[in-house]
Length: 525
Image (cartoon, rainbow, N blue to C red):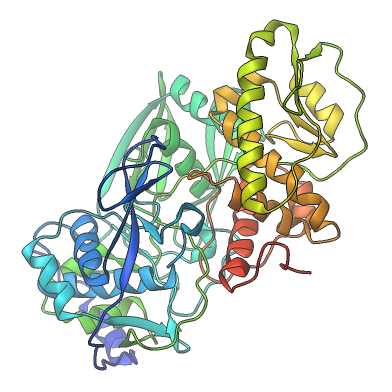
């Protein structure tokens, strides 16, 4: 590939300043349990793997996994040095995030939520072999590193993508001359499609205009005004994820964009592909083409880190965010004063201990909802080791206003548990958001565990509900070391985006504590 020599002097200076060193590799690399996505089925599979929530679980040698991920994440025709640098980064991410899918029965999935796994090629297998057993280390453990397809000419800090994340010195926001601001991209979105995507994320109203309010140090959009919607603002990173979830991930390729109104909707023009944190895969390809080694490339993108044998002691992994994962808020509520009954709701018979209260117009749904809730309650009670409550009521409110009045929770939340009564927004609203079953499971966990966790910080209860409800579309976990959210952040969010961020941090904190060997009952006791 022909590339510009612009900025080589600056890159050489950075490379010279790097403290990167190489050491020997271990003889016996470990294995890793990978969830291979097979669709939404939950039937047990036959053969060497087991199916958990739509994933076939396969245990494979770590180096085979690394070769497959490099095949899935690298650009075609990448040079050997670029592939080796990516292999070390991929291996480091796998070690630092081992157990990210602990609740699903495996370590990492094969999707972009973790790392994209494909069939290895001869070149990617060679790169894995050449770097076998080597990882980037920080303070003696596996470093929490990231990479994206193309940074668009400027890398990004973790906290700009995952609010609440810690910004380590080896992941700065800085210019990347090797990327050269590519790729440039354009996208046209119909106003109706964009409005549908935002409504699915919990925003209300009719979208009239999009206005960039603020940009960050890397020139990416940090705040975007949504004229005509409530809430009226969204972060650039959240906007990209909202569009990706409903309309696909290849439209708004990064948060580095301009936007203007058109007759049919909105025209976006931008550059880069992905979040931009850490190693730039396109930049590393070009550096390799200029003759830089894998060590030089890693020294440029992760200044101060050391490449060490995998046998080096690792810190407890903190679940973190992957490049293109998309999440929707799945909030619940803290106990509030018991509400008055909703007149339009009529209970069903409850031989199973589950009563379903629905508006009369939806009474045909009672039996199915009751059976599903009873089944989920029994499974969760067994897993948690608790007695199932003698009686639970699921109340689906006729309007969002009724839900807000009864629970004191914002319209964009998806449930609230108050004693033995589980409150939900209207059934059609939950279905439109695509979170009906998830919301029921989440609140059932609260009904089962909240009595045992009385007096604990709210993030413990919410983190447990997210963990045990076992949903593959949980809120995004922030990268790196995470500050656990306060009760106020969880109880009084100002927007769906803020609540999703708080829930992501709660999930990360809970999962990290659980990974250290404690049971859910012992956390923050």
